[in-house]
Image (cartoon, rainbow, N blue to C red; front, side):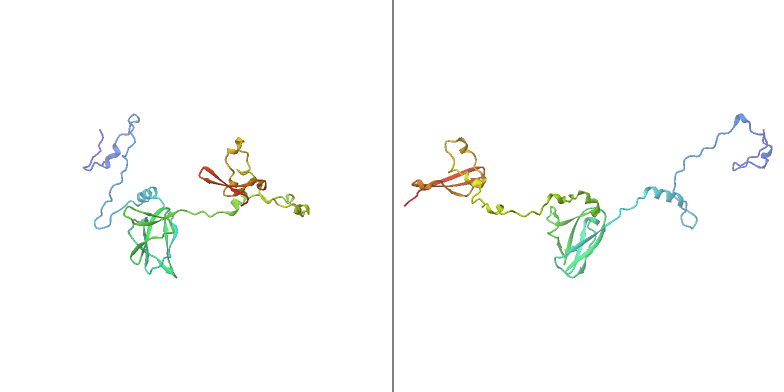
Amino acid sequence: MGNANVTEDGGIGDSTANTPPHSPRRSRLPILFPPQVPLAPLQRGNGPPFHNQMWQNESHGIVAQPPEQGIPVMITWNYGGNNVAVEGSWDNWTSRKALQRGGKDHSILVVLPSGIYHYRFIVDGEQRYIPDLPYVADEMGHVCNLLDVNDYVPENPESVSEFEAPASPESSYGQAFLAEEDFAKEPMAVPSQLHLTVLGMDTTNVVSSSKPQHVVLNHVFIEKNMASKSVVALGLTHRFKSKYVTVVLYKPSKR
């Protein structure tokens, strides 16, 4: 009904002033846009490609993660040689690092992430390893040292002070000197356990067949009251694993 002129590109001409007002019953719906999908950058005439810098910064902030902080490790070789290098599994054995010589030792400081690595030395063109450190051999017989890299937390002496034993009370100690009677008693010539020998036991007693004490093993014993007898008995007990064997030798007391 209006006099609006529609141009070829779909636009509305200048005669929109005569367009009747919109009816409240026929209110238009809000315009919906499809979700935006990032596309390849558009090429200009002769200029460089245009990138959406804002979208790139946001995407990198979500995907990128900070790299793990390395741990410095000192590798030392003190078994001689002129040209010493080291190679390891930290870079899949792709490079060799030359060690710096200081006196008789060669050393290098490397920064590695935490983990367990295999490494070996190249000394004057020959593969070597340190036998005093942990090492492992593969199926081909090649021997490599093992390197366990982890964060070392030094001990804090203040944190372990609560585990120390308390000081002994002064009242539990005295300064009294020993009396004379403490020195008058002579010590025993033979320990009391050595009196319980096989020769001194009663053969009619059942207890005599029990296991001998370990203190009587490998000792030669003589029977008591040998002066009143014409025969002297000498005994020796020794042990073989869980069995005890006693040898008794009888000999005349006088020739």
